[in-house]
Image 1 (cartoon, rainbow, N blue to C red):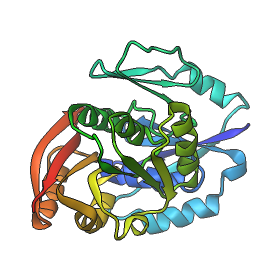
Image 2 (tube, rainbow, N blue to C red):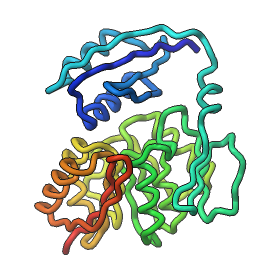
Image 3 (cartoon, rainbow, N blue to C red):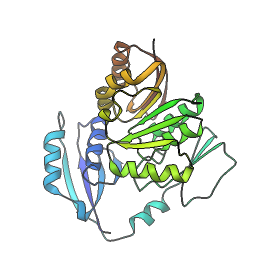
Length: 280
């Protein structure tokens, strides 16, 4: 399969703006992303490259910062083989071993998650995913109704199920992610996970004991009212996908107005994950 590399550069793009743009690009068919000092590179199969759609996206999504892009057609190669050769398993808190289908089985760890990551989605390597896995390992999920919002491969949903959750709803707007969850729950025999395509409208009028949301600051703020409605009193809300400092302050202030209490946070390379508790 032939790919093109689109390099995006900006001198004033903030981290959350980059994350939001990457999420939008994924919806256009870009399937792998590589960080750079002043931007990032997005890879897309040549068959999916649509410059007009890209220009339209940038026209509507880019607000408050300037960005340039350059397209380079790459030589033909086996991208999945190349990606697999550079993908290594991870171990979280010496308890949760996350590996792909082509890695060795390690049954000595209490929790082992096997995923087919489809090149770019939630492998556990990103700091935010690792911190969310750590939160799940530290907390009680036994017999609970759990929501994994923006689920990607379903890695958080799978660990919640392995930790004893009664049922886990895994929601993502991307149909590729939804298909990935369906496949990965089979690989892990976590059949109490239900995958669903959509966004905040997909969880209206539902109730949960725990909500996991690893997305980005702006989408979290947009969906916060629905989380507050759906989470049971004394329920736990775990958030990630944003930076420590101003991002966390903004989210905490919003949640305080909705009746939540900040409990604790984790920080890794300036990325942040935080736990909140809903009051009565």
